[in-house]
Image (tube, rainbow, N blue to C red; front, side, top):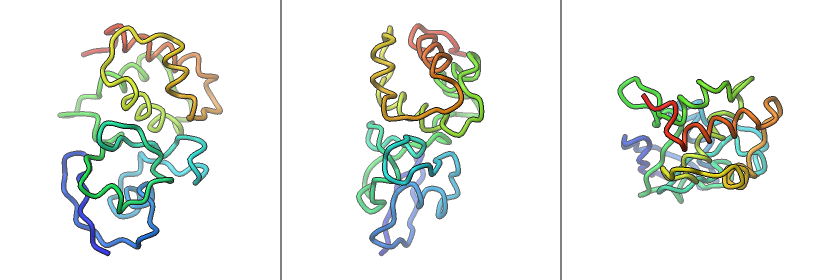
Length: 155
């Protein structure tokens, strides 16, 4: 079937199978490799993207269901070669190690925070409860988001 997807403010007309999930279409058809495949059932958050302002698991979302909606991937957050402030906060605060979970973690937080200021530690923990990071222990991630929510790392 042929669908049209609006991904990172670009329109893509692509052929898919009805059972294709959004994560696979983004990675394999559109070559957006920041959307990672981890568990393939919505349990790790590595494939998280934002659809119409809400964080969703790309592996658990049929690509066809995203037609007519605005999709943002990690590649779509930076503008004019500048990292989004949330991306910058992760970098400045060392909130990554292997980096596998980082795109999904950032997209979960981007969709959950919606630019809110003064986000609490508990709100951050609640937002990322569906994302797994095996390297950082979450401390640096929480510190980065607290920095971001207080206006740090904003260039």
